[in-house]
Every structure is written in structure tokens, then in C-alpha cells.
Length: 435
Ligand code: NAP
Ligand code: HSE
Image 1 (tube, rainbow, N blue to C red):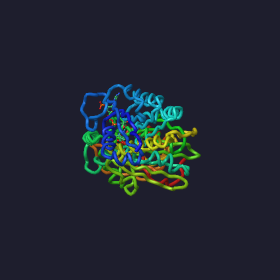
Image 2: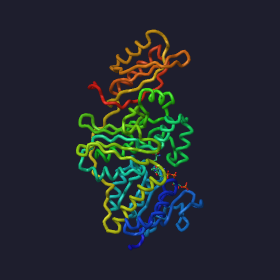
Image 3: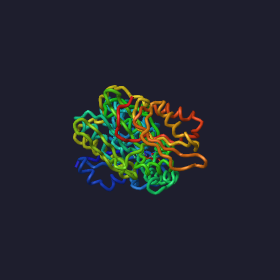
Image 4: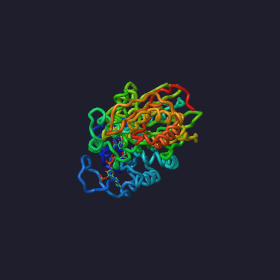
């Protein structure tokens, strides 16, 4: 057997501790598959005094130099999260000739170009399978297995925390704060869970997926983002009554006419849609390619061991390259520059919930306001009263986003409309061409 390949681990939290556990429990399998034993030599943490499992024989440090200056360490595994200092530590590791594995979607979604270029300049590998979909193999399939295709669509549930929360809120009527706490306790949420519930984590993943799938640069700022913070039990209940479930979707489309459209938002999904039954912490990603047709990837999207599974697979891949003397820079691609489709031009059906005066003629006034802005209604229901007011739910036909925004402004100006409580996209096949 070859001599051990030494790892420097940056971070020993939820994912880092999972990596230590997998490397410890599966040491034999990993060694056989890598062609050499894989050993963590040093671990960087904030609190080097804290006792942690599987770290008895390791150097536990709070000084990055202990890892960067150790010539025996060939692979640095970054699992601290956030931009700072993770980005600079990874760049320094690559400049020191070390290969890098990371689960850090924040850095890749914003600084992917810099990371890939630095890896190439320094002849090292940079792998990031765990950055999207937790344990689901999705980066490598897009970058390697699906390269024969022109990919036109990637649609997925890519945030475990919010999918867990929406599932518990829908199936058990649990309240928002307590399900968020549960997701945090299970290690699914980001250090700052606002990134999960406000859709930023999913947007980062959408940017990474779109860049790789469409061979273009999509950074976080190009993604239109809306999280689940405004979803109420009433919306969940209406969705159920109307035959839908609410899911936070990441949607990326590439068409010659419109360009690249990347967005994250809550969506009413018909109950029979394959993504509707993806529940709990599970994630699923649909890919449409012109050769394969549709392919779907499914698995646990967050959590210690599932994410460690993807991280350790990247470590094994690099270790194999080190053993064979040829690390392939699978992290690098030559990207083109495609037009980005502004969110106003995107098309969808919408669910609109309004509180209105309960008096004759109100429905007509509302339908006219929608119609004046070119929004055609598919159905309108009025089921309950809120105090003296009536609650109305309208589902529109497909319409450009800018029209629904204008309709909201027109509706808000009507004296009979007290409040527009919710506006949520509905995923249904388009029924007609949209202007
Ligand atoms: P975590 O539980 O908060 O752990 C972070 C670890 O990094 C801790 O050990 C912490 O040290 C250390 N750390 C943070 N800042 C540091 C600094 N400035 N200097 C030294 N050490 C520092 O985070 P996590 O959930 O494992 O997530 C790690 C990464 O994986 C993130 O990029 C996250 O987005 C990604 N990810 C997470 C999941 C998941 O399910 N959790 C899934 C996929 C990807 P102390 O222990 O001393 O505080
Ligand atoms: N916070 C993330 C999630 C971790 O809930 O999906 C996995 O990237």
C-alpha cells in the first residue's frame, strides 16, 4: 500500500465531524478505493480547546499556518462556511500547492471564477460536490456524465432546511419558529439560518447549477430570490384545498430567445408533480437535456453524514489522482457569456390572495383591475371571512412577471382592496402564448 495521504481539515462542525466519522469508520474502504490510506493530520477550529470525537491523535489548532505550512498535507478540506476567511484560506492552500475540497456554496457562487483559475494556475484540484444537494451526486454528473447534452432546464428542491420546514408545516401544522429550531438542531441549517429561509442558500446553489449546466457565468447577484418567510398557514391550507403543495424551488432555464433565467421562489406545485412528494430534508434536481431527455437526482440534501459522503468522495477522487500522479482539474470549465433574462420577462401562473371589502361589485372590480394589466384569471374563490372583510383567492393564467407586478399596484390602489396578502407562482403547463 502507498504511504498515507494527509488531509488538513478546516472546520469540525456538522459536516467536518461527519467527514472525520466517515474517514474513521470507512477507513478500509476509503484506502482501497483511493489506492492509499487517507488520514486527517490537522484540524483548524475556532475553539482548539474543545474536546471532540475522532480527534484524539490529531493536531487541533486555531492557526491556519499549521496547515498551510505543513508540507505533508496534500489536500485541504474547507468546511468552515461563509466567505471570510474561507475564501482566502482556500486560495492560500492552492497557492501552496495543495488540492482543495469544499462544501462552500457562498464562495463558489460569488468567487467561482477566481477559485477555478487559481486551481488551474497552481496545477491543483478544486472539488465541490457537497456544495449543492448535500449527499446527492449532482456536480460531477453535470460536469462529466451529461456533457453530451445541451441542457435547457434545471429545476430542483435544493435547500434541505426549508423543505424540512415546509413539510412539517404542511403535514403536521407545526409553526414556523419551532420547525426552524428543529432544522437547526438536526444540523441542516446554515450558521445564519436567514440564508436558508430567505432563499439565499438555494440561490447560491442555483447559480452554481446554472453556471455548470449552461456553461456560462451566473453569480449570486443574477439570481432573483424570494424565500419562505412570508408563507403562512393560510397559504399552505389554500394550496391543499386547490390540489397543490408549496415548495421552495430553484429554477434555471436556458433558451435562445430569452437567455438564462435563474430564480428561487416558493411555488404552488400540483400534488401529482414528482417534486411534490420530495419531503423532509430530501432534495431533488430535475435536469432536461436534448439527448437524455429528463433525469432526476434525489437524496438527502443536508446533514452531517450525507454531506460528508460527498466531501469524502471528492477526497477519494483527489487521492486517486495523487496516487496515479495525475490529478484532473475537474473543477475548471471554460465558460461562455450568455444573456441573462430579467425577472420581469419570466412567465408563470400566479396565486394571489387578497383581503377585500365584503360588498356587491367587488369581484368585478378586482377582475377588471387584473384585466386592465393584461392578467387573465383562471379561477377565483371566496371561502372565508376575516372580521368584516372577505378573503379572495385568484389563480391567474400564465403571464409575464412585470404584468403581475403592475396588477398588484393597480389592485392596491382600489379602495375595496385592504391588503394583498400573498402572491406565489403556480407551476402548471402554459395554456396559451403569453404577451
Ligand atoms: P458548522 O457546524 O457551523 O461548523 C463550522 C466549523 O468551522 C466549526 O468547527 C468552527 O469551529 C469552524 N470555523 C468557523 N469559522 C472559523 C474560523 N474563522 N477559523 C477557524 N475555524 C472556524 O458548519 P457546517 O454546517 O458544518 O457547514 C460547513 C460548510 O458546509 C458550510 O459551507 C455549509 O454551507 C456547508 N454545508 C453544510 C451542510 C449541512 O447540512 N450542515 C450541507 C452541505 C454543505 P468551532 O467548532 O470551534 O466553532
Ligand atoms: N443549509 C443547507 C440546507 C445545507 O438546508 O440545504 C446544505 O447545503
